Amino acid sequence: MSAETLFHRIADHAHRADPYPLYAELREHGVARQDDGSYLVGTYHEIAELLHDPRISSDRRHRTVPDDLDSGQGVPPAFIGLDDPEHDRLRRLTMRPFGPPHSPGRVDALRDEIARIAEELIEGFADDGPVDIVDDFAYPLPVTVICRLLGVPTEDEPRFRAWSDTIVSGFDATPGEDPDQRRRAAAEARRTMALYLGELADSRRGRPSDDMLSALVNDEGPEGRLEPIELMATSVLLLIAGHETTVNLITNGVLTLLRHPDALARLRNDPTLMPRAVEELLRYEPPVQMLPQRTPLADVEISGVTIPRGAPLILVLASGNRDPLRFEAPERFDITRRDNQHFGFGSGVHSCFGAPLARVEARIALDTLLPRLESLRLTEDPPPYRTNPVLRGPRHLLLGPAG
Image (tube, rainbow, N blue to C red; front, side, top):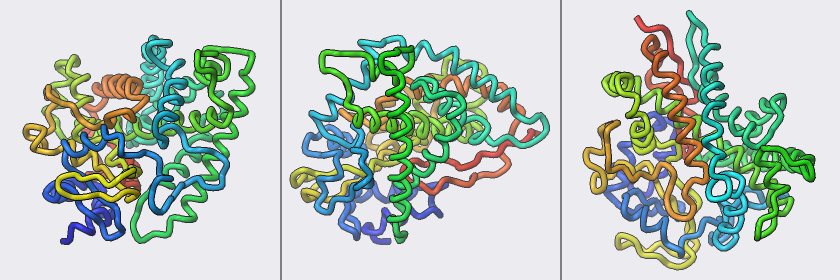
């Protein structure tokens, strides 16, 4: 088939369970211009080069035909969708209450709480009925953690699933579908969540507590504080990014381990392998499959192809993670793999802000699940997948009693 239809085929839900043959086809082309004028890149070294190239923008407004998803909704892009110096300023202000050097113990302090939540969720599994790893475990764990980290009251946590699902659906790049209605709904959900979080943060102003929202409105660093509208946009980003990708990481992890019983048995016998197993999961089944919102600020040549200024550029991270020119036996799931500089959390200045927390959550979640997985089996393989080709993961993962 034509390389110009690759993105259409990748985004087709029929290929969601196994997009990797299409990624192999993409790597054969290196850079593939699509029939809509966008460009796909799927080889490891070229993706790495572009992620570190200052001529590549993360701001969609630099495209020849701007497509800002939130136009007219009053909430500006979060720092993930901005370039330096604004990206750097907002990221550093947000990092102050989250991690080193100003708050080095924030993530480590959550370990006991994450383990307690994981144990409580597993205790709620039905003894004789099916377990849905997504709804019963992989979703509630990270959303509870991020809500408590930010300081969202427990009784308000259920509201975030509906908002989050609507927002994430706005990034669904399914070809042939009119995106306007979905994008409008996503923008409205983002606005509603932003207003809620802005009001919640404002209620902490002058009354500091130990949560991140409180720190963001009360801590005065050398660069000042986030403006109220910046705080709203940043808080929405933290809530969405803080759980959506981790849901997929945990769910893909369970599915992959059950498909590889030798690796599962080895982890049970040697739990010290779990950190490397999580890194291999991030390479082998990354929760973020591609970065669809990069834009060249000038004509850029890569692999002999000139990508024109303003053209949509899609970096297919999951394809780079299986590039045989970078990884030995890339199609093999190997929890002892050592040379594993994957794109599971991106790379460059936009590498994932919450990677330390996601790693801790995944390790604790899988450690806690390991004893239970011995008595469970997949009831459907492949499972039903979410429609989104960017944030790829099962919508449900049903496990039943083994034997």
